[in-house]
Length: 311
Image (cartoon, rainbow, N blue to C red; front, side, top):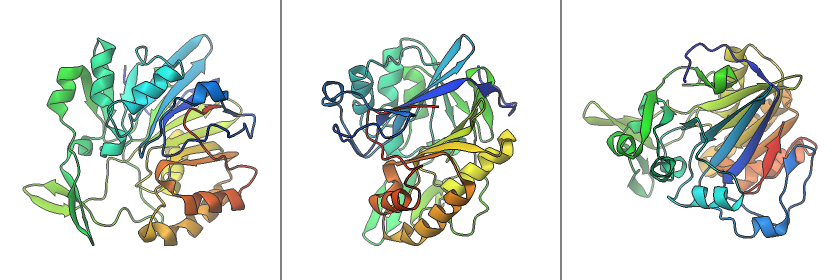
């Protein structure tokens, strides 16, 4: 059941298992008490791709809730990795899309088809827009989400532009993120087809997950943070009514020349927020990741596919 009341209940713990990310290193050791790296034999059959997906399990008392956040780029990678990791997806209570870009939606139909039942799909309405990248090298059309095909496969679609909760009120979906920083200005060249014409696309459907872990604070999970990871975290603080941030995970979209000027102010702003852990993934980019590792060596964790984080 999806609730539109934004009151966020405290969870006892949350486990976030990374099913799809751009990077895999089967020899990477555990660095902190919160990251669980599986043995070599368990990791050597996993796949990496330019995409993002994670399974979020929330525990409160005797209750356990499982929500899938994004589904990667290809049809098969996310489901394959989940099977290799022994993480069944048939018990998930919902799928949440961070936004409608193809590197986060590729495995959707396969998940619904395999579920054998209707599964709630929580999305911002703009996730179904036609989109393209109009850049220096020409125009590249993005694959468009097909609501009819998803419904036929088994999706029960909930179009939510604003905040809502899942997992009996223990998981907050931010909805559209308020944009207040001066340096997080969206993705240059993105366009959307609205009212019969192409227009600049602010990617309003970008949204994140938020969990408030008892005695720890907020765990914020972004897909790409097209709204800006600082905007995302500050908005999570605002709508949850909780200041302390325990962990920030996911894509921060700081890769490529157009985003290079944003790296320094983003790292500085994250340091000011002061999360206990920072886990940059997917579209964050190596330049930004190394800056985080240098600036926050005790807090920053280099992710690899197959890692589970326990907060």
